[in-house]
Image (cartoon, rainbow, N blue to C red; front, side, top):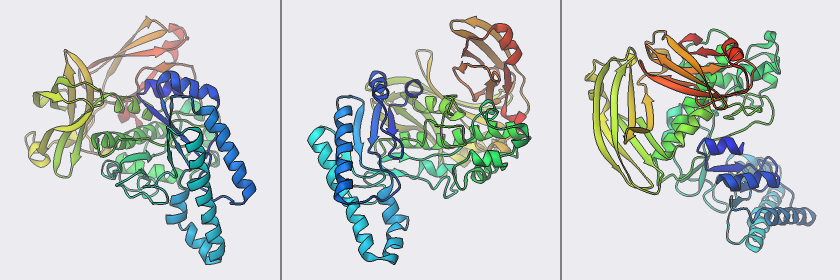
Length: 484
């Protein structure tokens, strides 16, 4: 998990209050990798007793763990609990208890105050006074619900509220500490717990490996907003992973563009503890889903990000480095056969630790310049310095199901390289979400689920111990058009 976070440009992990305090080795690895830890105390989504015996137990457990972990430089902060304040104040818990007994409701709330406003902050103050304590996530302060102006926010309008992915970029708080969307693991993982006769997302086996009450139906609902119905079960898994990645991309890029108003983006979640459909970006075997590859690009120190803001088409650039950058911003509209319909180049000065827009036009007027054929083109943005692409990104004006994409011819060659093989790819037409697989063999692709522009050549490194003969037997390549 820590190595995945490091190589994916994550600089913080949250140890969730519904889990466990991790062992020392985890914190050692985070220290070495430069990964900050948002450390919850182990309280989540429940009310707790307030008797003296329980409070003393809570205090001693907190002392033990604060003393154990306080010398780790990776510990960024201590958080009292996950979502208990929100549950009591806005999920109807308080009203339900008051309907039974005002006296009991008052006792339950007093126990909350005793644990999270007294015992835990006093332990942190005494044993780790240089670190901050945050009583509950999300909140705007001690006992104050999240208000988007102060503190942190958990946003589940996407998923539970079935709001469109685009709202990730507009529902902004000072720190987005939880948001997410589900996907199934890849077919190689599913084969370890399901038989071919179970290959339906609503089969008993697939439903038993889904712990959200609205899970599989919600995945299907969102998928059909953006894509046509996949042709088979394996294709559904593939498209679902792309859906999750594209959806969370709205969030993490929108949050970064909103700097300095928003200064944190922690998606839910990085890992799984069993083979399951979930909000994770890696499965329980540490296989990267499409989302993890998107995260690596989306959290890179420098990000170029095209987006729609009402009637405007904009390009934001985020520079998280602590030094300014002078670079060239290259923008172009390309059709799916590779013809450049429009392009513009400009020199941009990016201050250190900054976010701003460097392209801003009326969307409708801009689209009219290339005949409004938005279903046949892609907007490409690249930030280039000294011939090196610091960041590249693509933007499509229509959902995938409305794009006029023809099947590309993607060719590849394989060459032996240190630690595995290089796979050299080229394509004659737009190749959407190129997906490389090696069956049930072990290996790791340096990139996957990526778009290739017509005429583009890309080299992907596969880290693996299998032979070249075996690789030729098991390597498969898919593009998104093939899933329908």
